[in-house]
Image (cartoon, rainbow, N blue to C red; front, side, top):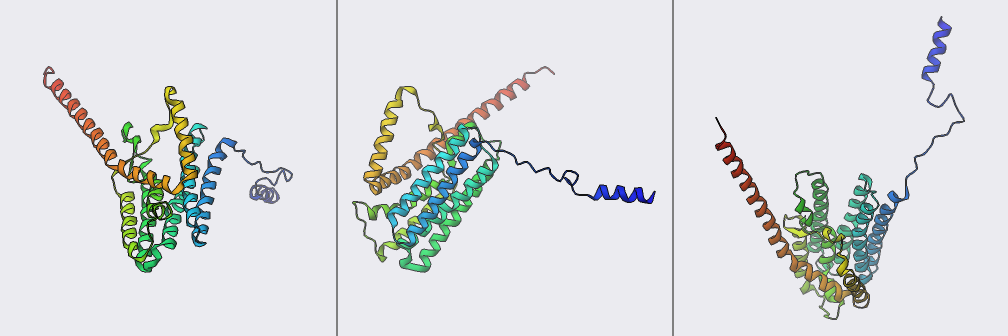
Length: 291
């Protein structure tokens, strides 16, 4: 009996797979449609890292264009994932990490090496505040994804300036310097650039609503040709006059913020009126109900 018990203990303690030593572990195959959006995200991450390299080398225009290209890819990866039905928690986390580097660290390094370093301590403080604001903005966005009580119209708005838009808009002083406007870069201009950077950081962590652009996924067939021509024309202008085009885009985006806030408040008022009407109707129904 002792021998039988020892033999049973030996079988129980043997590692899994020991009975079939020739058996190999099979890996799970992942469809390509799940990999493609993450590859786009990683390409954007590489562009952010390349922007930091160009900043350290003093090639500021190329550094800015890398950040803009990363913002374009950031807008595409989510749409590709939804179109292929390949959204995943892994992709969302990877996207947040890439956004932090592309739209937080890279613009801060670019602006500091370009001009803010003229006032080293305060300039570096402004750069850090911007990066921290970007991190807080991304963390709040990830938490808001789990909110089940948001109304349907809330998808039209972002709470606070989104990090890709913040990265593009915060580089406005650089665009003005490199464009035909030729804004001079001197130590006297640095305080204004610092104040502007802190303003963008505030807009990112604030609760001021901004248009999300998520409703632009579907285009009416009647205006498809016009939209395609407008996109082609915009790309040609961007290639020919990149800094001037980015200046116009940044100013236009800043000008749209008050309109986004007004439309957001209008939706809130409509919801409040609908809730009040529903409550009044419920009260009236209960008041006339038989005892």
